[in-house]
Image (cartoon, rainbow over all chains, first blue to last red):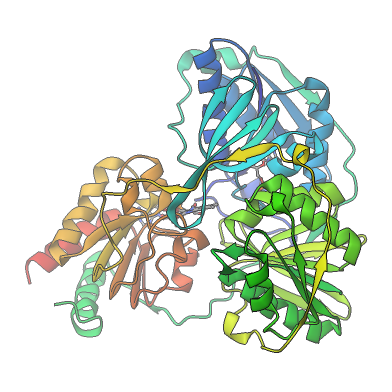
Length: 253
Length: 323
Ligand SMILES: Cc1cc2nc3c(=O)[nH]c(=O)nc-3n(C[C@H](O)[C@H](O)[C@H](O)COP(=O)(O)OP(=O)(O)OC[C@H]3O[C@@H](n4cnc5c(N)ncnc54)[C@H](O)[C@@H]3O)c2cc1C
Ligand SMILES: Nc1ncnc2c1ncn2[C@@H]1O[C@H](COP(=O)(O)O)[C@@H](O)[C@H]1O
């Protein structure tokens, strides 16, 4: 079983998000990056399949500038066998169709049985890249995976549906599956893994980025519509005010 | 037709987000001087088409095919692609439902045209459109413009347009024939099911204390439980808390959890992502404690505290107990 995992580097949820003066991207020098949350679950799913079958290869694939190699090393430290870095130092595509096309070009010769991706990137949040990639490579696709089971040349996926429902869907391999957070318990890298990661193969490809079909014109802070009463002061003052609000405004008895 | 709304079936009636998309299409049609229509498919195609013909649109298309009776991403993507190729719409609108997440990116790949997903607003500059989208976990908004040739696929987040604003009328119906064969469909689906719940029912709770990832670690959950006990409240959480195994799945509030509407929803260390907010925005009083003044939860909170919940919560529990 040959498995690719798409792993994206995104700003951490506690990172500052300052904008460049042209207001169309972040000032990356001030951003603290981490591995995209759902991608961590995709990686774990791939590693578990490899371990269960005691055979196969897990290849981590990431697209982005040089900083991206930090999450690539992290994925290798967790147990991925090798990595492909699609390097886009300039002209980073913010269009999912353009990004997926770059992934398709980089992966098409590899004949992966499964491609795992996260259901959504925590920065751009398009929720599309894994599906588009699967379609471009002629693979079966499924989204919102909560569990997977490998059958003979097929994969069975438990999908999350709306309103608390689930559904098992079986499809032929090769398949591109985007996973939902919570589908497993991601591991932490071991010390041995961290040491070993440096020696693993990291293949860098530098494609030219094609035309974007959608582009970001402007990024800005949302303007809030609702009047929020902000409670200020020391911790003790805040606690006292909250108790008063609970009693007199919200009328909790 | 210039604008095509693709309707989703919700057990024989139009999915609520489909009516919202009709409202969006009418708004776009008025602003841009374009014509709008809708299409229905699937096993309840007739009842959906009849329902849609009660709205003010030019035409309602019915797409009948036995391979569309059960949803599959391959079948639905191929069907919509063929309708697009026949009807040549400039804009194709969807509600950003779970089903749309699943199959619309495939249409984007088949046509090599962009899918502007999960938009919350649309603006016009002459004939050009730009879509607003939440990015970076809803902390920032961005304006996105499509380029190149039509069609442009667009989905709108729940409640971006109000279904009450969809104007009614009488639209004519037309059938569109498409060609599908079973070799195109690579998936086989079993019946949808619900996990045997047996957990807490939060839907009737009067008071809720809800914990998010900001609680930091599993050992801190008891801090929130103590506060809930002091208030006589139920405890709930955001998804990451359940994903980490700190609380059982039945505690989760949001689009993949329960929808609650208590008298007070006290959000502790919850950022306010849309998938969480849809499950609790009906609460009568939303109180948020978050250390980040920019957290989107403050956009919907009635009362807000910018501060460290780990300091505030124990003292708040004490203060309530001593009353
Ligand atoms: C299809 C889909 C379905 C989903 N379904 C759901 C769902 O049903 N329910 C759900 O909740 N989510 C759901 N999500 C996930 C959702 O998008 C968010 O990722 C999630 O709600 C974030 O949870 P959070 O606010 O607890 O964590 P984060 O976004 O990480 O926020 C943590 C917050 O805690 C604050 N904080 C940190 N430390 C402290 C401290 N000491 N004191 C005070 N504040 C602190 C931070 O400032 C931050 O705002 C879904 C996502 C998708 C794509
Ligand atoms: N630049 C990237 N590098 C690696 N993986 C990516 C990249 N962009 C998207 N992905 C993958 O595609 C998923 C969905 O991304 P998106 O379509 O942007 O929401 C992510 O969770 C990743 O698994």
